[in-house]
Length: 298
Image (tube, rainbow, N blue to C red; front, top):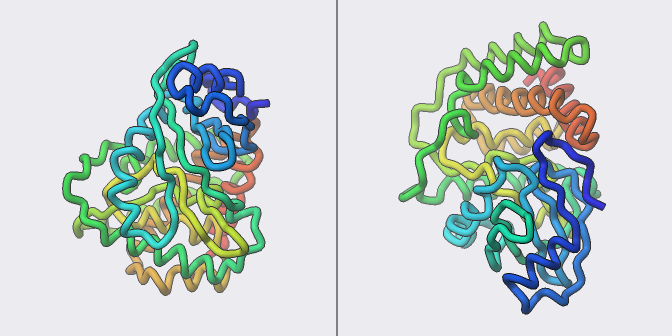
């Protein structure tokens, strides 16, 4: 069964739809076993295709550009990265009543970081290595960053943040949340060259095999911009010593650290009212991040 509906205009999918799409466009795979993958992801329904592939179908309009972005950019950046990233095998067209482009990718094994028994201190070191490698990749030819996207000024997000705090009401400490947000807004903006950022380093986008970080997935927010937005795991995954290791290895200046905290705060606060009744995993993760941000004294 597909996951619960999270969006008003969400497109529902099922295994038989995947079968029809494959039969009409990639018949060589049409007879392989198809199994839905349990996921609390917000943008795509995922189906395991045989033993070595997965089919990803956008469930909402805003996710429809991801397949093309990953097709174009991941082969260019993957050789520079120390962890595995998705490899696209094919792109499908709208058909059989399904309105979006979709993709077939190689299957990446592993548990998500929040469900694994990984040593978070080592994950912090390995993820920092991934982020540093991503930042070093030349940005020649990268598309301009659209407004209100990951890696831009936090000020672009102020209106949306303020609305979300209002919607949450008594579910959060609005005074403290707004004070922390204002601290991040007041920090100097990033003035150096823009770098590649993943933009969505949530625990569910980090795969662990045998307790070791092995892959980073979901590059829908891949962009060039302020590297502070890739400090998100400091609060949405790491605590205590693992947070200190992540910070030490990336060595952000104090302004970048505060902007990174602002990005984590924004992501948590905006997610909470939107997914409150539909995605308990996202709500749990966002609530955890908000609690870590509010208690972080570093």
